[in-house]
Amino acid sequence: MTDKECELTYKGKAAGDKVLSTRPKPLVTLKSVRIDAPWRNLLISGDNLGALATLLEMKRAGTLKCADKTSGVRLVYIDPPFSTRLEFKAKKNQKAYDDKLGGAEFIESLRKRLILLRELLTEDGSIYVHLDWKKAHYIKVIMDEVFGEENFLNDIIWSYGGRGAKHISGQFSRNHDIILWYKKGASHVFNQLTIGKRVPKKGGGFKQDDEGRWFKTSPKGDYTDESMKALAKQGRVYTTRTGVMRVKYFLKDEGEYLIEDKLVGDVWDDIPDAMHLSESEKTGYPTQKPEALLERVIRASSEAGDIVLDCFSGAGTTLAVAEKLGRRWVGIDSGSLAIHTTEVRLLTIAASKSLDEPKKKYAKPCRPFDILGELEHDHAGCAGQKTAPKVKCSYDVDESSGECVVRIERFTSPGSGLKDMEALSSVAVDLNFDGEAMKIDLFATKEELEKNGFEFRFPVKAVKGEVLLAFADIFGNEKWFVGELA
Ligand SMILES: C[S@@+](CC[C@H](N)C(=O)[O-])C[C@H]1O[C@@H](n2cnc3c(N)ncnc32)[C@H](O)[C@@H]1O
Image (tube, rainbow, N blue to C red; front, side, top):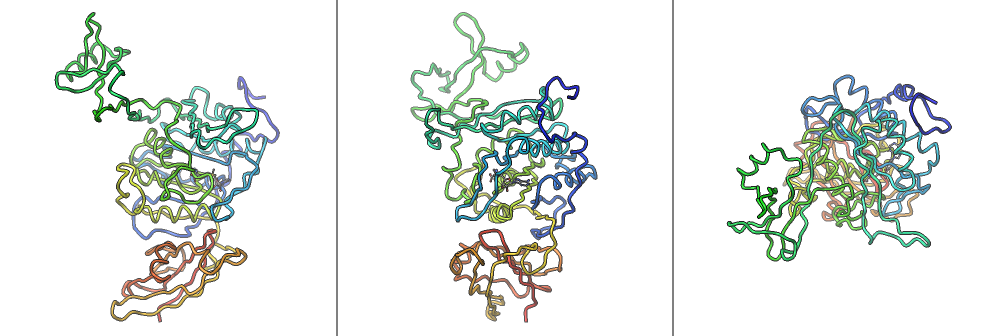
């Protein structure tokens, strides 16, 4: 027993300082988006324990900084496996990841990551840990140990809706997840959020002022006399017939309804589960979380330019939302399907929904990011993968347009049982390969390739040396071709 008042004891619990001396994992750059920028977002392929130790080295060396120069990560969100003992597969039956750890092994595995994550946070940073009924209560005790009970901010209930709830005989349906939110130090970044709720005008006790504006009132609460004077100047104080001063809140007028801004509480029941995502948001990766959920977390606990870290990043939901909200981001996942799904998602982000104006598309292509990993390329099957797809392609130069036209003639993934072209996912092109990391100059998804008869083009003039073509299958395996244009 340590000197702590209470703690969770189990077999194999390592000393905290031993965890902090976890050996950093040497990482090489496997791929990059070819745009120069002082800060590059990072997608790390591999087990997160060693990768977190590497990030900690970067923090100590001053190379992991938010845009305002604060060292470290302002916000961590993690959605680790929930100890379901299941194997997760993606939409086309591709293996995504195993969730086989249970008991003390699960708790200790997560605790080690939490100890490193705490170190990575800025002093005013915070962490959200997304779990469910199976292990959240054990991890709450571990979080109290690692972060301190006094730093526990909220036990958020994500009630994802009755539609997703399965009937379980003899007990209530389970239809919520638990998100534990902790801060690191004395103060933390927090932006209070509100949700606009539509309420009928009639019967809600709403009033109208002389200018026809609708309002509701609430007691003065902890407003000081000074603040009440300031509110009075803005026309926001209402005096009742008995002389009691109340604060006015104006409401948006929508015909028979009013839009009432309600503070977001700790029960989030307005975000449906991932089964109800729009087609454009679905990636096919299992256990993908809704962007709306991550939008709430990121808006509440970070500012533009802050680093957001997710070390169980899966389909890259946290990273995509961080990108759309102008945050810096770092993602880690040990699965090649997760890394590939995230790569495609970020490279095609310009075609996705804008979070600020939902009816519009996101305005920008993504900012530069690097994909880091442990393995050296063998330039035949990327990153030493044993099951690289088999690709037959040919190319011609179209003299009239000055373009090189590459045609994919056959594409199969050995052992998948899928027919020609069925396993194709995307093509990335580096027009000036330096023999080291791939720099992505062009990228096309299968849908785009299919529209063009499985052809893609690039200007011959843009080719400076060797061209690298990387063909990816739906399992996240790649085949690389390197050569000069004849
Ligand atoms: C529940 S999923 C995350 C889903 C994600 N939030 C999303 O919206 O797509 C958990 C992820 O953790 C990854 N993972 C599990 N153990 C890991 C480890 N030790 N290191 C890195 N990633 C790991 C799995 O590959 C899986 O993609």
